Amino acid sequence: MADWKENLITDSDGIEQLIRNTKTIAFLGIKPESHGDQAAHYVPAHMAAAGFEVIPVPVYYPDVTQILGRPVFRKLADIGRPIDMVDVFRRPADIPAHLDDILALKPKSVWFQLGIRNDEAAETLARAGVKVVQDHCLMVEESRLRR
Image: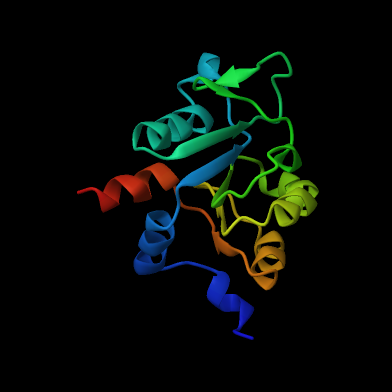
């Protein structure tokens, strides 16, 4: 078995390859349109506009049933089909509570947004065979690929 540390993606080439192999993204912690000025909304909106399938999984906002015109899932486990990436908009200390759901979903990758880093959670995911990016903005990295 390959070293689990190979699943921790830190270089530009690895990030580019990961994004190019991604089509479906579940956004854990997405915010609704009423918070359009916050990254947890405009990053998923950008990715949807760039042609990615966006699956909203807000942690709060219990009355919201759609975000970006797509139905909301209350938990990752409720998605019920394969996805390529889980993009995480949660505080680092809140990530461990989602690990079981993330692992059960079996995404190819998990992306911790800019400013979000949890080395223990990243190791758990990497040891399970999931590729992990920490502390990078998906929108910035995806935009860089199109230049």
